[in-house]
Length: 428
Image (cartoon, rainbow, N blue to C red):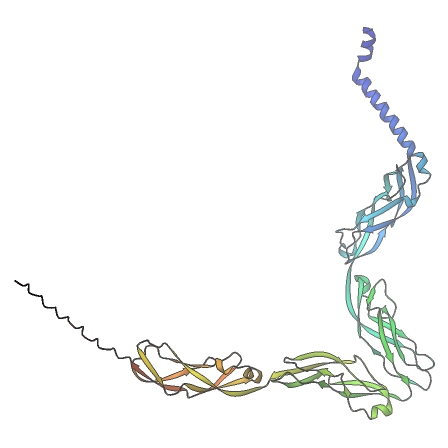
């Protein structure tokens, strides 16, 4: 027995290591029998991409091989759709000169995949990504219209806007020269009055992509008829209502002062002006600065923007008014008597009529400062506090005469001395 134990424990570290190695090799054999390879392609999805970054290229754009572990009963149901390949672009910015950057790829089972499915590796592990900065710029809108039917003429197109904003990768946006609206004029000669899709084009007229336009459409109006012509006429602003009481219109300006209109020749020959939509200034006490529409007569179309800018300067009406103000003495003494030549004066105020109307005469005072004045006759200048927003134009009289009399101190009467009563003489 002792000999058997000795055989077992003899050189035991080496024997224990051999057992461990055999276990690992066996486990590896078992696992290797269940590790499988799935050939792609599995499309690479993007996450964390910044709004101002455009992905110009991902090379390659898919995972070609996935190594995974799955039990035998599960392996038969595994497809490419069982895996999800992604790259995280959070914080990844375009490289100088448009160079590509290397971004690691992550592959994992999709949510709800077969139980026991484990991804052990994939190829490629990284991809090259080329990014571009997203920019925008404003471009003009141009209309390309077909020819009108024979015998008819077409007016220049009228658009509801003249520019559009193009946005996209810098290399593409820089190529865009204009946003084109292509319009076909119907053979029947019907006027064009519709929204037309805008197409970004380069200087040669070729479409540019990938970019976006804002807006995507423009409203185009084209008159089609016989003997159509154009004419420039002045704009007349139409104002309704009156400013608030005490206010008046100082000036009215309109921009532009004239617009070009189109229509039948006989209609335009009698057209002398274009009026605006009425702009109300009822009860306004401040300036008006607004954009209003034009109101062309029937058969007349305004070319370009059918609106104008109107500014109306409204100012307060001014005037003057005279009030009666009571005279108030400041700094009187208790031992003096004050006499005035008049208890009130006339005060003339000037300024906005609304402010003059709001003055309460009972609150007006003309102040005379009599501090330190001795008994006698004095001429004192008057000061009048003026309500906010008004000016003091005149005080009548400017000075008043004040007579000051000292109060007489009464002479005290002497106190009578009492006469002592006679002392009675006692009898015998």
